[in-house]
Image (tube, rainbow, N blue to C red; front, side):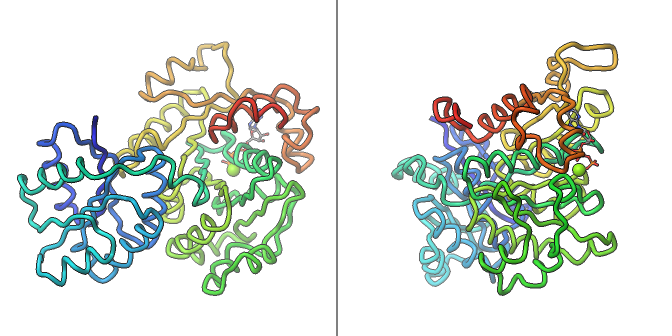
Length: 391
Ligand SMILES: Nc1ncnc2c1ncn2[C@@H]1O[C@H](COP(=O)(O)OP(=O)(O)OP(=O)(O)O)[C@@H](O)[C@H]1O
Ligand SMILES: [Mg+2]
């Protein structure tokens, strides 16, 4: 059986040594590298554990001595039975005891030595395994819709995805992070009184009552918050603000759906991608979209995202191809990744946008599109067939 390892360190050299040492442990696989050891790291760890429940974490305390213990404690609070190998330069009694108190199961002194590393992995292998599913449903899931270029349908899919979840009585928040387009509100016919600016200003006293009192509630039942009208305010909602806000959201809501627009090199969007359970990479079948999808994918891979975190969604999907329309096979081959879902073209979508209501609200008008879209939500959320019959 192969062992899955996660490593958290802002020190590139440390991560590199772990990578090298792993090469000598044939049954161990590095699943994720966290290059930022930040207060919301536990969200990413939890999300990776859903895919790899048996994984253990190598945690570098030396890369952020001040906060390292606190961050490790938070991770262990979220996942008490996670196996953690802490590491630091000093192995004096106090350092090791502090690491154990913060929840570490084992300790490695830096610089890492291959033999000691191998022994530590062997101890991890012998340790009791976590109970599968013990982390499930503790934190909300974050779904980020990222378009590979303008107009591919990221907003439409995010809005309707949230609507279906809310129709199914899940608590959900739609977060519009596309500062320039800011289309979620207009697709929902909402004129928000409060925006991300007020959220940012009130983060310190944020609680559920304040949040729900502030932001818009769609008649379907979910909450929505996004940017204000004025474009120049973008810088006021910063990445650290997003981090605190997302910590709040995943603690309180089952699903957080994000319209990320298409700008990938924006620090708030990057923060959103980091805490995402799934990144829905939205594209179409034309060649500019495929080329950009390829660029986005390789960029995300270079940044340490894993392939199973990213789902390719082809919008306006047509089976019949023409010279300017690539087939699913061509797309999969070019991207070297399976297409997760194809959403067909339908006149019900522009009609719904004109009415300023999600198309899933008027199921009759949306017809076949409605059923197909619900299959997409089922597949993404892992909903069972028998419970999916009614909605
Ligand atoms: N499956 C579909 N069938 C028909 N029309 C669609 C479909 N999906 C999206 N559209 C149309 O494409 C247009 C763009 O959709 P949308 O605003 O959701 O894209 P976007 O990726 O969010 O764009 P932007 O780059 O402006 O943020 C809309 O006018 C919508 O009507
Ligand atoms: Mg949009």
